Image (spheres, rainbow, N blue to C red):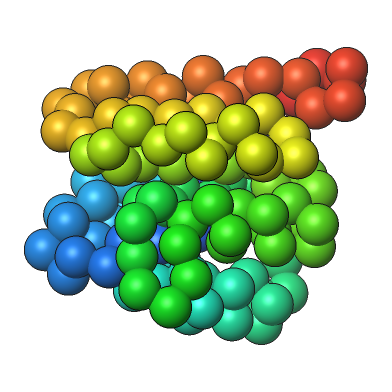
Length: 132
């Protein structure tokens, strides 16, 4: 019997092209389906036009046009099942203002740390129901 493993989908939003490409390559190599956007407005457009579930939003915090916190708030209201991990080189006190708990990873980080954080967040129960 062959069991097909579901690819989890990550919406990756990062305004630095080098970082965006590096993270896209790393996550794709790990088996994730990665949707990309260069800022929060583009990320929201991708989310709204993508017809399938998005398992995680992985976004930089400081970006032009719409920051990662604003994007996370929109995604949370439109796709409540989508997990969020925000990344930044700065400590963001604004994270306290988010309506729901959001995971944060401080830049710089090594790939192992990011992959562990993603897996930890994706494997958490949703609304008390263990993920299968």
